[in-house]
Length: 158
Image (cartoon, rainbow, N blue to C red):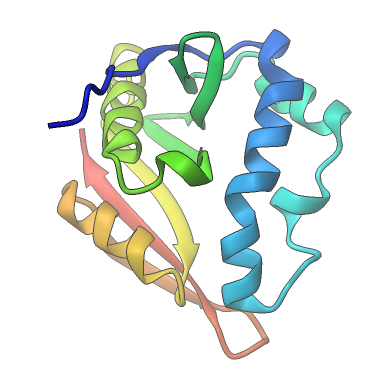
């Protein structure tokens, strides 16, 4: 059996912006290959844009030692928790970190008064859709992307 340490999860902060941006770019390379789109927002976002997103954000980061190995952003809009940009380091994907981050951010959303969580992914991102459905999310809408793909929105009662 592997000697695996469970990553520590804590709230995300503006001070994490540089490391979050680096992680996000590494994590979304595979998505860019699936969609043949090197210009997707997670790969083109600037450090200032990430900093701005992290102001008053309910997201979380997962740390292995001092290294951020996963992150998720979220904000509340009325009673809706809008979850975005889940990014897991390539060497940590498939380890259960996405599930742990979703659980943590859903709890932060509940504490902030949200009753429903919503997130989205692309229709070709089958592993993401499987994860979200396994965690209780149900498809609520599909929006055509103009390139033959769709944005798949999923919701879950908190």
